[in-house]
Image: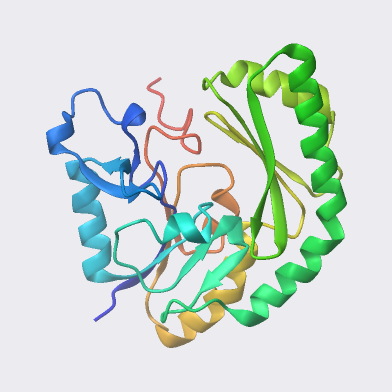
Length: 249
């Protein structure tokens, strides 16, 4: 029996890079769950995260809701039923097939913003050259759809990265999302977001499991909009989303 529907973010929620793992957890106790294209491990879960994942997988209808690309999602070794990836740009059904209707909508909307995305990337790259900063800026795509602009600093210098992006883009148009977490800046058009994709799949899930509560699990501010569509919300206590909530007073 499915006791709940769980819509869960992956990175920094169920697992993280080795650099972000707790220092009191030796590598031998970690479980690799995310892998590079060459098969080498990139992301690890602690024993407690593995226990949490096992509980979710065994007792709930588990649906990942992740910023990962479709290719990166397929290199994650966890059990799940359907998925949302690419910040909501792609929906997979329980057979692992892409939702064609959603894909058509995304492709059409992406075409309307392709020039704006290319302009943002060009501006960030130009500012990086001026400042001598090692920043990689590119447009992330799925299939033929340019989805969002992503900038990273080669040496994980977030302060320099944010300064370059601020100088390059000024303020984004209304409705755009400027998401910053660690050494990443994602600039997303208004149509893109995890919440939009969750809103598409949630009615069918509620109809299929009418008495099951929906639990949203995430760590970052871009998870909050889809988590508000759920009945309950969970987050790691040491996360961007939880920052300040649990400070002792």
